[in-house]
Image (tube, rainbow, N blue to C red; front, side, top):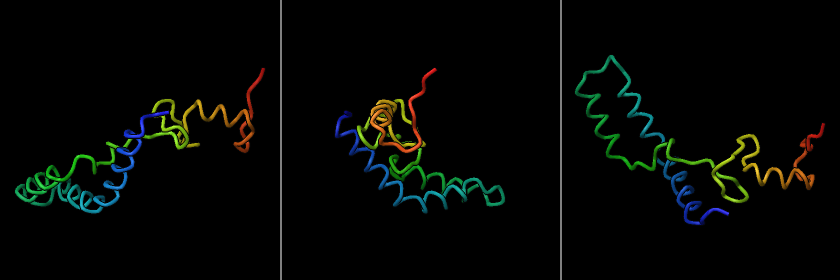
Length: 101
């Protein structure tokens, strides 16, 4: 089980990212628009850098919904490999069977 502080920190980052998404997207559109004057683009870069770092999408870590584990994460199931194996062996995940050869 991951530390609860790490899990809560990641949840707060997700909420902050959702709140700041539109503003960040408009500033990025201004920055990448080559038709605008350089002063406007530099101003947008400065405004973007003044926003909280945790509002960036890349700061969010994929974590297991069950244990909070960050490594060995399967996006399709939104859980770690350990939790996936446990639930798969119990037959709790439809369509998932243990491989044998």
